[in-house]
Structures are given as structure tokens and as C-alpha cells.
Length: 210
Length: 394
Image (cartoon, rainbow over all chains, first blue to last red; front, side, top):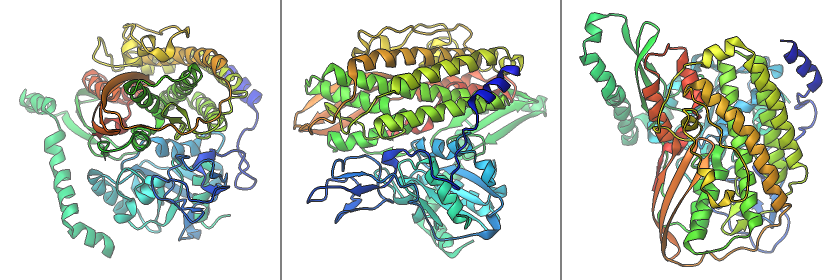
């Protein structure tokens, strides 16, 4: 026990000041790319680049547009069509994987890491959709996960917010169908996978906290 | 129910899914469980029950369905269905570059291993020599990924055993590692770094080895403190024992078999490392093997980066229009993955792929009989199974 306590003191405070302060870090290519140079649009395997702009919702963070485009390092790329003041003090998240490569799942889970410590913002995970305020959906929607997704959604009480986390859930990316074909999405969180700061920022936007 | 959902439910597509879902209890309770029921265990003991778990449930990282036959708190049989989230990814007809993007996403958490394996196979097929510098950089990427993956498994085990301080300390280290990877390679999961014959963007490894060494040293300290915890050891000890060669990677090495694909791979020639083994075959042995491998991986990264250094992206290589057939393997953090490809005129014609998680999932289902229900999580998590890599990749 003593070893743990000493170790904790040695480490000091490592939790981010975000969203009160700036994010200390971001995964470069998980942020939307921005135009730097070149006369022609570079090749993009998902057609996210057009006329000097990159569509963050389609971008799969492959970096094939480099060096014409470079990462923006902007973690505020999520878009929320809702603002739910009832969730300002506390929001409980249920994460559902409907066909992901695993990376989005881990980035959502990373919010519980000491560096992000989502609990300080009143964000917590729940093990059942019945207790959830927010459904964080990751991956392309497979046929077999459609019903579990719908059941999870129907089990949630109002007000409920649905997040599409990552390019697969938002647009289907290279690998399949978008979640929005089945379920109305309230918040899109771009990136492949999105940086944990981007996910945290999206949750705050949906609650109307800034 | 909302109007849009009603409309969707009435569509043929959804009805198909609904039927499919209804089939699950019959189809996937599994032959072994049906056999157990036929053995009249049920008729003689009313305490026997089937516990359905999943496909989406709290506590699991990915969507997977289990039927768990229990008698009291003892597990009698387990069968699984990994088909819920399985993506059907078509690779045939694609060029090397387009296929690579999909292969990186077979398992995003082990993307460096899969993309390196695919690049290596294709390069072998067209007899392309790659500089040692690139070879060693790929090794450094794969070993950093191995540390990250093993730390994740360790965090799941410590979290499951309510060792919350250790759990948080391990998550902290993993996050530090992912940030160091992002800073050096531009992406926390190495997406888009590998390319045929080289790398696709600048890599800055300044200070990377030092960070890896620091993480490895800190993990060693955590590991030794955990080994003093009777509570933690008791939870893992004798959970889900797997013996013999019916598993892959750390799971196989934890049953005393000294097999590691890295010893046979060309990329690892000239690098010194120990193959870590243990002999218990249980969750504790697998945890100890993974912990040992973290330190070995740190040592491999140091050696590899001595030969590598900062790199600039290579000019784009012409993928060509060769026709060939080639195969290869790679030791991913979960075990040995292998792939064989047939290419015609520069496009993939067919692909055969074997992931370690298929073998490990079957080994897991066979290993938990007789364990208590509480051991289920430790058995599963200690194997580092990834359902995403069990999909249909053709």
C-alpha cells in the first residue's frame, strides 16, 4: 500500500485542465487535415477532399493527402445538433460497438484515464443502456448489430443523445454502412479514431457546457 | 418508437436481421451446450441454467455473444458467437494501397503488425528490397504496439480484480505511450504510416526510446508491487487453464511452449531478445508472459532505432502490375497472424487470412469449464482476444 501512495505522490497531478484550459496533446492525423500547398486536390480514398477543403466527417486519417494537406491539430471538430441542459451536472454513457476495428472503443475508454479523468466533469460509463443518457456508437453498422443497437436505443430514457464516434459510424468510411442510415445521430465526432480530447469536447457540446 | 425506426423495421433488411437475431439462441447456444443438456444434467439438477451474455453488454470492450451454462457458480460450458460485429471486408480487386487501408483497420489496435505483414508479403511478391532502416522502423512500431496492447490487457486484469490504483497507473502509462507514438509517428495507432517499400510521412523518433524505457521501468515497478498482492494473484491463479498448442502468442507461451514468430521473421534478424515463457497456462501465467514481453519489447525498440533514426517519407513507389502469389506471417501482440495473397496485374485476386484471436477464442471457450463465474472475465481478458480481427476478409 505504501508503494502505491509514494508512487502517486511522485507522479503528481497529471490530469488535463481541458476543457477549462487548452488540450495538452492531440493525435495529429486524428484531427482534420487542412490545405497547405499544391494546385490540385490530392488523392483521397474516401473522397473527403474537394476544392481545397477536407470533409472531417469522411476523413479516415490515412494521411495520403500529405504533403498537400497537414493535420490541423484542432480537436473541436465535433458537431452537435442538440444541447441538453438537463445533462449539465451528470451524464452517463453507454458505448456500443456495431462493427469497429477496436480503436474507437479504446479511445472512448481512454476518457477514464487519469490524464482525462472524465469523472471530474460529471461524465461516467454505465453498463446498461437503461441507465444511460448518451449512446456512443462506434464502427460501421453490421447487419447483425442493427437490432442490438435499436434495442439499446429503445431502452434509454429521455432525454437521450446519440453520438456517432469516428469516421466509420459517421460515414461508413471504407468498410461498410454509416450508423445514420438506421438511427438519427445527434452528435458527430470525427476522426479515425477521434482523439480522446475530441470525444470529451463533443460530450461537453451535447450538454451545452463550454 | 420513432417514425424513422418504424419505417426501418418494416424494411426487408431489418426483418432479415430480426430473424437472424431470433436464430441466435438456437444456433449459437452451441452444440456443446445442447449436448450437456442432453446428458440430463438439467433433469437431475435444477441449479443448471444458461446465462446469455452480450452481444452488447457493459464490461466488454467489443460486441460478442456468449452462452454460459452454469451450475451454481461453476461454469459448465461456454459457447460463443463472434459474428455480430463481424465486418465483411472485400479486398479482391483492390490495388496494394487501397487494400492496405483496409488491412490497417482489420484490427486497429494491432494495425502496425497487420500493415507491416501485408507490406512485407507484397514486397516479397514483387521481389522489392527494402532498406534495413525501414525494416527496423517497422519493428519499432510493432514493438511499441505490443507494449500498448499488453498494457491494455494488464489494465483490464487489474481493473477486473478491483486493483484500482494499479489499474489507473497502467492506464496512465498506456496513455503516455500513445502520446509518444502520436508525437513520433503522427497517429496513436500507426494508421497511414506504412506504405509499399517504406513510410508515407516524416517520422521523428527523437526521445522516443527514452520514453519507452521510462514506461518499461515504471511498469516493472507496478508489476513487482502487484506480485505482492495476494488478492490479485488469487484472482488470476488457475483461471482458464490452457495447455498445449491449441492457442497462439502469449497464451501458448504461458503454457510453456517456447514459440515466437519473431524468432523466425526476417525483420527481427540481428536483434537480441528473450522468448518469455511460463508454465502455468492460466490467466496469471499469461499476465506474467505479457509483463516480461513489455521489457523485451522496450529492449528491441532501443536496438531497432539504433539502426533507424529519423526518417523522411519515400517518394511514392509504383505498385506495378505484376502477377504473383505470396504469403507471410507476423507475431501480433495476440499471437501469430498469417496471410496469403494472389495478385493478378497489380490487383488482389484472392486473400487467405488467419488471425490469432480465432484460435484463442476457441481455446478460451474450452478452458473455462469448471471455473467459477467470476473467473470468466480473467480468462477472456488475459487472452487479449480481438473480435474485430475475426471478420470476413476476402
